[in-house]
Image (cartoon, rainbow, N blue to C red; front, side, top):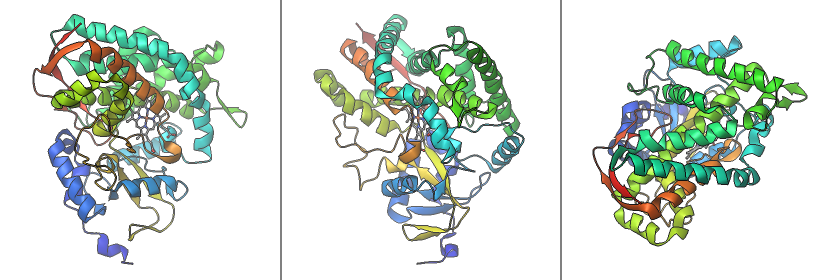
Length: 420
Ligand code: HEM
């Protein structure tokens, strides 16, 4: 086994992972990741303004690390943020504020907090919700027809449909939806100038403070008058007989409200672009709608809206022969795992009947995406409504990707189409 210092040369390709603009340029990103998988699958990246990390680009390593959730912890660095933002958030948490969602937590606390919302995402709850989701899918495909023959599919449809679903599940009033949407964009689009409130960690904290302020009121109202919705389950959830702390309660809403729609928006819009760019696959789906479940799964692999999460080693350990010291962080490059040639046959081919399709777009292990079944159902409903009604579709301009290091996808998808 080699010594840690031998591996400390920063990977030139690895720098793309610490460059938000690389995620807006698929060719550049994938060229670097493909070389990394082949030549340096566990690569050291030391690139300001971030603290250094080990980039993990192989599918098998991502899964192995996520499986060992007592060795690789989510605390204190669950995702890539600038060193300054890491420090500000740490100080806020120590002061009893700041964001501490499921993705920031480790077991045993994580397991207990996750259980509070888990029932709302199980198959039975999904079956109950399906009628509403189908109804919304129809409403949005009708809207697409009405605004045609040209529109920006992202801003008109892909943003609003999942937002509407998740806000309905939470039980929020419809007049609050636009505000939640803006806050979510500001939170996840933090590296993209089009969506930024400002550039500093303080600006990010101001976004958080707005989220927290809104949800503090919601908690008070659901505790006073419980209703049949996810917001009530969170507000009245208990751990070891005690109510959730204010930070844990507000953070729960934040993760559901934000993770629940931006990700799905990216998979929906990127999925449509993949169908436009692969007309034979679109035709194949139209001719055989039974392929919808595998088509949806392929759209999720193809787009991989969540680019990364991180873990930090609780002990000295080794990944693929490379020593990782206690306290060092690993970056799980889901985008790379989902193009791993060792797992996927022709990984750069968009194949709506791909089976098996063991992608890691929803992560793996104890943090596996809580909303995976909901995201799949939403996409299934929307495309089941759309495809048979879609008579023609083409690009009406250049699609544009969001600059990000975390959650992202298309921010604009101009299309020209005809719909029944
Ligand atoms: C295509 C859409 C989506 C993608 C690609 C996605 C992806 C992910 C990923 C990669 C993780 C982290 C998993 C890990 O660390 O192993 C995650 C966690 C999570 N997701 Fe999703 N997600 C999507 C949709 C949703 C939806 C609709 C919800 C609804 C509320 C949701 C809620 C959550 C929550 C609460 C967690 C934290 C789970 C935990 O840490 O225990 N996600 N998601």
